[in-house]
Length: 307
Image (cartoon, rainbow, N blue to C red; front, top):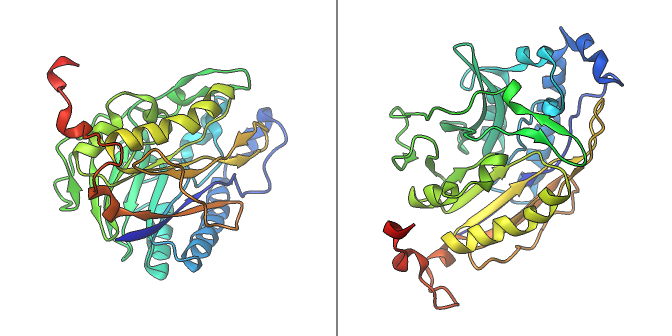
């Protein structure tokens, strides 16, 4: 089976952003408008991908708003929402059903006064199959700017999802989901760098791993081109990395985009999109069961006791 999948690479669509980070406080009371602008923008992108034949669309990390972790401002705490009944998931469920497209929707989640960086998996009929929360939360700086995610998000404590028969695997941190297009996993941004993450998803049966990210900086740019092909080859699956493209007021940090899919032989797949804010590729899931052309069988020959 070949499935056509899409990744978004865009920036905040709310136009009335302040010019200076010091003025972010004036967004108090306007956060619903920020979210609404981005929900409408991403609904248009999902529809555009569906017109190109996409059966699944992975939206970017924290797609309902700007990447606010470039600074520290408590105004954004009120942007968090419920992962089941909140407006972002409700809107994307409607779009998934309308377009017949599976959607991975990464949001800023609020649950019992804790906030998480969470991806909700919505199948083509609008059903919520489950969710995954970002496990590793970065805080640091590079030559271009700083990021303060620990100020905003709690790390995942693992999610038990017995209510969802679609959840695969026994790892509560990195579940896979049986969907209408195949078995998928999600690893948000920083999680992609850690040894064992893709291995856990592969062990849970993932055929496709989606990695919604917001990333910038020279080293990140180099590793962005290397990590996905290596992990896809090592675990014989597909990986799609989505990154923002452009600048967002008031921080004006440049995000390099570069969204793409990597395949099980370490290859970068052709991008079939003519839209700058989308990357679209065909993924041959049947090919995952074929003999590795190198003659390798890493899964068979691994000796986990020595690692």
